[in-house]
Amino acid sequence: MFPINIRPEKLAEEMAGFSQKLGKGAENLLHADKIDTGVSPKELVYSEDKLRLYHYTAAEGARQNPVPMLIVYALVNRPYMTDIQEDRSTIKNLIAAGQDVYLIDWGYPDGADSSLTLDDYINGYIDRCVDVVRERHGLERINLLGICQGGAFSLCYTALHQEKIKNLVTMVTPVDFQTPDNMLSAWVRHMDVDLLVDTLGNVPGELLNWTFLSLKPFSLTGQKYINMVDVLDDEKKLKNFLRMEKWIFDSPDQAGEAFRQFIKDFYQRNGLLNGGVRLGEREVDLKGIRCPILNVFGEFDHLVPPDASRALKGRTASKDYTEIAFRGGHIGIYVSGKAQGTIPPAIGQWLDERSG
Image (cartoon, rainbow, N blue to C red):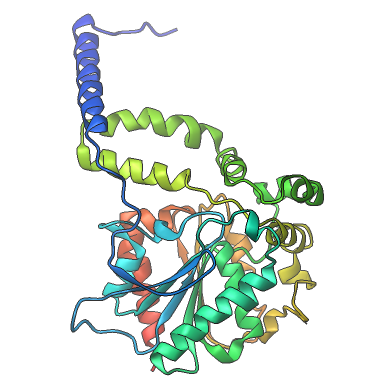
């Protein structure tokens, strides 16, 4: 065994530095302002039930794509992840790349929403938001960007309403829900979702949040708080950490019937690949998608493994399919500096080339 060589004076120096950080950190925490949720200016252009449709305002005279983009986020988290802070904002950088951006905020479902189905969300809410944007711009077709579960919704929507969508962008979107490396799928594939929903009604967001955290328990529930000590004395970095914490634990409840169908049709039946996803009177067929598709995914994504997203290739009738693989994870694709410098500009360029 090697002897432990720790000099007392060095240990005392490190302990003093650690105590100083803790003291400054406590002061920063006590004086921390309210954590904001989204930094880019926006206007409310449509509302229905809990849903809000926002239009993000660009600087006066800024170049904008003549075809607006509607962002469809997942139900399970809040969409301000796309606009989390000034120097880590996908929306801000999409606007800088010349895109005219709208976003659906699903709000917080309550008991009155427990009977909402996927048909209500996709053929109802999303379709009406698309029509609002189309009418505001006098266009037959707009661009659609779907994120994670919102990407799966966007695939379904485009397959059923191709005449309203000019270009489709999917980000960290699962298509094959049963890849061997999908731990979340392995957990829920044999879950008795009927018993869960019949017992609880709406599915608590806190339950889902702790499920996601349990996929990487050491790094997501322990290590990050140890690492937090390194930023406690930096007011700006600490506020950024708190923004992320707020988003992680800001998990809306899920409308029971929509959750039931999503687990059964997507995770348990792998319906996007195998068929059987019915929305209203129609069945979703990815071959109904004929518009250009840009598929963006993270190579180290633990929630949506890259093969789950790559499965989209060749599954549609589109003759214009492009992939972008980002060397990062499910959240890093929105908040890392490298992603912000590459992904929004690439999306903007791709859309500009196809939106004339």
